[in-house]
Length: 163
Image (cartoon, rainbow, N blue to C red):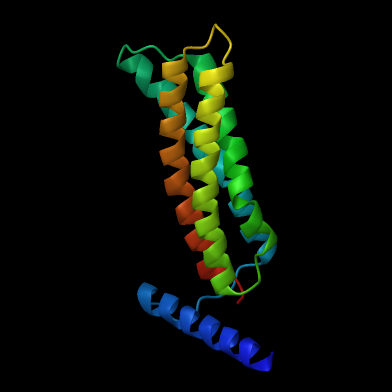
């Protein structure tokens, strides 16, 4: 039992050193876990909201239809999936860096499966007034926005957490 604990401590220290060497910085001051949890939790909301605002600004300038209902429905699915994806990492902040890395991988898989499940639900159960193809395009767009935003947020949490 003590050997396993010692191995985890060595792995955490080596991971911390690797992160510091990658960023070419001195020791990174830890950020309080409450701020890390808040930042990780609002990431899906901010990323999806920013993508929606950008779409509302750009698409009318390009004389393209906005399909607001489909965008809002896809945004709702993406926010729910994004919150479910970051939930394990939010709960386990402050634990070992290896565990946080595993949570980041789990978040990517959860996001992929969640958006795929949302797409299937849209295809099968969408109301008649929603355009299914447009809804799927919005889901794909929000998936990639969340993929980038939550990957950056997960890296930020792992870099600044107390491990």
